[in-house]
Image (tube, rainbow over the protein chains, first blue to last red):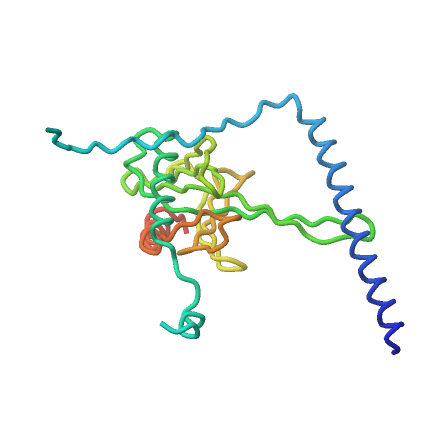
Length: 63
Length: 161
C-alpha cells in the first residue's frame, strides 16, 4: 500500500470516527430533551448539601 | 528512593485525603439518617449498563452511582445514601432491614457485588472495593478494614441464602 493510500484510509477512519461521535451526541441530546419534557411534572429528588464542618474547640490561655 | 522502585511500587494512597473524605461521608450520613453514629460506613457504588443502537453507531453506556453504605449489626439494617464523588451533597436514605427484604446475597459473576432485593420488582447491587483511584468517578477513600467488616456482616448476618 502506498503512503498516499494509507493516508487516505486513515483519513476515512478519522471522518467515520468524528461523524459517529457527532451522531451519538446528537441522538443523546434529543433523547435527553424528550426525557426532560416527559418528566418535567415529576418532583426533583431531595438533595442535601454537605454541612459545614463543626469547628474544633481549642483551649488557649490568653494573657 | 529511586524512580524505578517508585514506578514498580504502584499507586500510593493519599491517606490524608482518604481520612478527609471518610469524615465528609460521616457528616453527610449523619445529616440524613437518625442516630447515624450507630452505623458503620463504607463507600460503594452501583453500575447501570445499558446498550444503545443509534443506526450506524452502537455500543454500551455505563452509569455509576456513588453510595454511602451504612450498616448496623444489632438491628441488621443496611442504609444506602446516594452521593457524588466529591461528596458535596447526598440524597435521601433507603433502608434495607433484614426482616423486611425478600433476599440478599453476594454475587459471584461478573462481579462480587452485594445484591439486595427489597421486593420482587426491584434490586440494588452494591459494588465495594478497598480503594478506587479514579476520583472523577468514585469517592477517594481507603477502607480495607471497614470493607472486611461489612463483608463479614453481610455474609454471616444479613444474607438470606
